[in-house]
Length: 388
Image 1 (cartoon, rainbow, N blue to C red):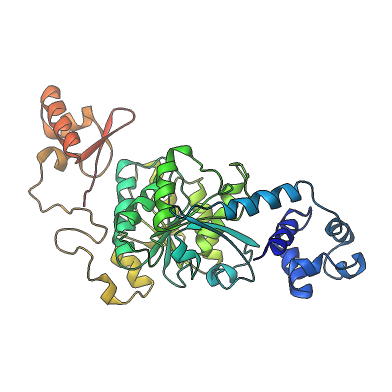
Image 2: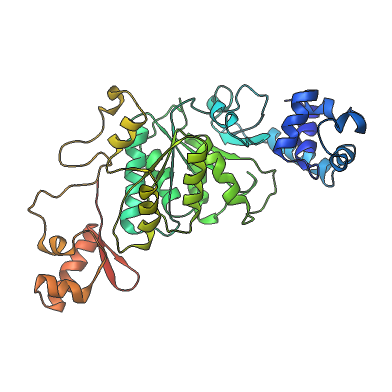
């Protein structure tokens, strides 16, 4: 994309009243954006209403500044850092899976290794979205990390949204099994801001790791802040890039369920991990399962549904652990863990179950917490944490 073509694409995206649908009609009729802006209002009205045709003949506010800022951003990538690129609908690097959806973005801003951006950044048929609560249980975050690690090891690129909680854990799990050189993206983060900022700031270091071993993707122009409406909209890209969407934990009213709904509407598979009936973060997953989502207990469940060849599953754990890498009890576990089970539980209930005194039980719980076998949750309750 040369300088003038970049300016034309940016002008098209900034023109008031021109959404993705109207822009695609104009592109289909007139070709590249430069040609659109050479048309008369009468010609433009063959595709769009009069008000939109008039807007196309005017220079959008802020366009020239954005054009120069974007060109400088592209040119200022340092050799030792991640490369930068912008791909349009007509670019051969634009992901076919996303192009086949109802509302593909006109432009995708990308950051990642130069080896990926220069060739084919997006795997054609090996992406899985992993999404869930921003406030997961300890087990939910661990499940996200372990499933993502196992699924990436089996050949899938993990797609998520760089949010706190499950998203971050999924990205980290994929990065855990990433090995240089970067032949394919370990993970793809689809964000709701311009690529010149990171949101949330707590994930800044994670974003740097993703840009070194995967891709950060946005449809939003540089300078776009984290507006609330951006995040539900970007979810269609997360699901659209992926063969399926795995929901790890989700409340009944959550962005993860929006992603799952969009995945179903796009004809993609939807998977959900069941959880405790007492955990609010599990209710969204249980609702999805009732609606027909595939219940998932192991990474093999996902791979078999997606028809990933069995040879790619040879590296996954089988003996003594499920395919997400979570340890399975052999019946000789610690008595406090046995009493705790797999649901969050308070101290009084554990005293009643174990018959131990409160002081002795607190010592045992502290030892298990330090060992990483349990997590202390808000409200003075404890939950078992499965480990790889």
